[in-house]
Length: 312
Length: 290
Image 1 (cartoon, rainbow over the protein chains, first blue to last red):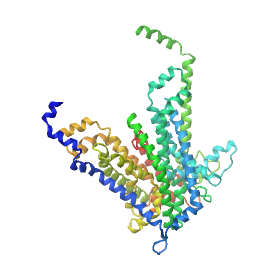
Image 2: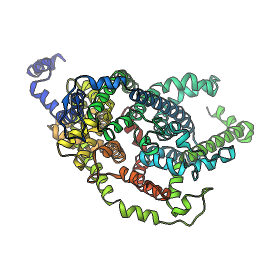
Image 3: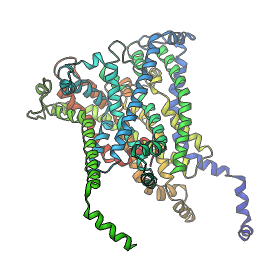
Image 4: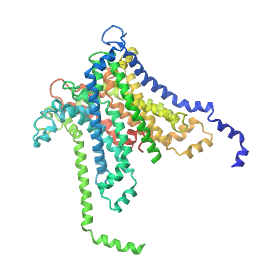
């Protein structure tokens, strides 16, 4: 070692000063296009949203936007419709994520065993995730749930169910069912990956020690699955909180406002009320709430990924 | 070793016994259960497919019909009207995916192989944009599009879909780049390869399967997107999801027609997903799960 250092002192001298300026820019350059693009396209709309949230502006009238202070915000906070849409979003997302995760764990456990045609069954189970969300919502609303011709009423008839108009009497439940149906495959795939990454010898050892299947699952498998469950819940929530297609295609937010979640509420404000100012203020409040939640989510994300990179 | 192994074998062979039988039947039981669950879960898709081949009059009956003479009439009707919609969808999906790869590959390189100083912050900035609900900005986005004359243009969708998929792609491509063996990169550097040749000659050939699966994930999300298309386009850029919405009339029989349209709109992504099954998890978890 000392010999080598003696032979090439100039090269060693450069290193301790860290990365050179030229090198720094060479490293930065490939990142810049994507970074600038993302900043421009994703941040500018939010800056403009902030601007319009202090303006009175209806896009269907020729009158230009004018400053009106915090009156849009006053409207938002005194607006019961916004609050109930917010609560509904939380309820829909939480229910769908939790049930999809429970089903996902169950399906993954089934698929983790060897049986004839396992690949086919796996393909069947992931397919709902691949169906275009609007298509799924419309097919559920029509051929599946139609009160007079729907398949579900036919299948449930032996159990005493007669021509239930699901989308009128159980609208929220129906929308949530479709969300669950589409997102269970996602959870299944993530949990299945977790199950398959479990070291076989630990399970073998537990079996030799005489541990029952249930005890093994609770004591060994579940702790091992924890980061996978966290990842599934986190990513599922990110996507499901924005669910719009199912609401739009199945119930149009109704009956009444019983299925109006936040995305649909904002859509209505822009498209039916033409009210950009109010929509912007609602948007800003939504973003602030999201940032609060996302801060925790990002921290969780960092932890999960650290586990992945360190553990695997 | 052989001495202990020999007595075991005949024992097993001689005694198929209740133990082994129970094990086998439990295995069959689990298999049957899995099949039942799988088929039940798949049923709505199957029903969509069946209904699509019905004549309209057979789609709305009680009890629902399971035997009927299949017809392609509704598919013909769909294909006669889907022209502009499918064109817009293909353009928006293909061009945005291409842009994502063009921007994403260099960015991932700068966040993995020769990382910039704050690569961690960069990564989390990209992922945080996924958490901002775009719905919150939809009103102002509409106004921006109106003022920049991008409203109802395919370019608007291309720009937005690129931004929508870029974070996911960067995380995913980065995870593939991290797997490129360090020795190969060292060797290339010793041969005097510059950055460009390092990317094109060493990294790209190795991660090309990864790029394909990244592209497929982007295709799925862009093809299925409804919210932005519905709010920001009318006719000149209306996509397949909007075609589906327009296939539900105010009155009259429509279930067969709707099912045919739903099948046509979904089949490309279903096929892509089936082909990319192995890499689906990796894509959906943004590269966290290998």
